Image 1 (cartoon, rainbow, N blue to C red):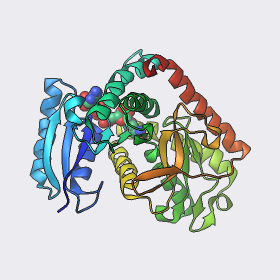
Image 2: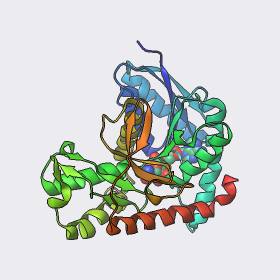
Image 3: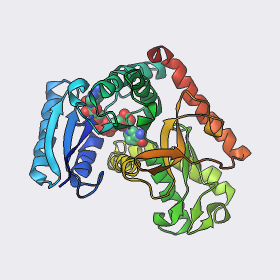
Image 4: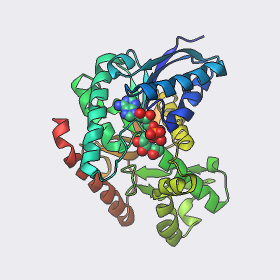
Length: 329
Ligand code: NAX
C-alpha cells in the first residue's frame, strides 16, 4: 500500500461535501490504490460540528478500504497540517440585502486566512481547488495570501469544471453522441453567468462541432443554458447543485494530479497574458495536465464573437478584483 496522502475539505458539513467526502474516500480522486487521511474543516459552531460528526459516522460505516483516518478541525492552521490536496468548498453565501462587494469582502475573510494557512502548514506541493463562490476571486485572494508565504499562485485554482461538464453534456445531447466523443470544450473566464462556454475548437467524434450545430443554437440555446444551469438546478431541486459540483471537483483535481491524458480541461488559473488576458485575475482557460502540472493550451485562434465574450467575463473579474483590492495588499 502507498503512503496515505492528506486531503482537506472545507465546508465539510455542507451539501457538496456530503457527496465529495464519499467520492474522495472511495478512491475516485486519487485512484484505487491511494489511501487518504481526510482533514475535514468546518466553522467553530457546535451544531455544525455535531452535524459533521454525523457525516463522519457515516464514512466510518462505509468501512472504506482507502480511508486511513479522519480528522475534524475548525481552524485552518491545524486543519491544513501537511495537506497534499485542499478542496476549499466552504464559503459565505449571499445574505439578504448583501451587496456584491460585501459578499466578496466577507469571503476574503475566509479565503485570505486559508491561503495563509496553506502556505504555513500544508505540503509545499499542495494543490488547492476553490469551489466556494465567488470561486475565481476567492481563489485570487487565497493565492495572493499563499504567495506571501512562499507558495506559487499556480497551486491554487478555481473550479469551472462543472460548467465544462455541463457544456459537454448539452452538446452531446444536441448531437446525439456520448460525452466521451466530445473533446476540446472550453469555459473561459468566471464561474458566473458571464462565463463563455466556447465550442469553436470542439470536436464531436472527430468532426468539428461547428459543422454539426448552427450558430443560432450556440447563441440562443447552448451558451445561455450552460451559463444559467446552476439557476435551473435550484429551480428544479430547491437546492443548489451538489453531487454534480462534487463530481466536477473530483474531475478537476484528479486530472491535475494524475494527468488529463492529452485532453483539454477547463480550469480557473492565474491569468498570465495568454489570449490577451492580462495577469491579476483567476480566469477559466483550456488546460492540459501532465506530471502533476497544468499548462494553458496555447495558439488557439480567437474570432470576434469569442473575443467579445471573453472580454465581458474578464471585465467582471477585474471589477470583482477592484472590490477587494485592499485585501490583496
Ligand atoms: P452549504 O451551505 O451546504 O455548505 C457550506 C458549508 O461551508 C457550511 O456547512 C458552512 O458552515 C461551511 N463553511 C463556511 N465558512 C467556512 C469556513 N471558513 N471554513 C470551513 N467551513 C466553512 O453549501 P454547498 O451547497 O455545499 O456549496 C458550497 C459552496 O460551493 C457555495 O459557495 C456554492 O455557491 C459553491 N458552488 C460552487 C460551484 C462551482 O462550480 N464553483 C457549483 C456549486 C456551488 O454553487
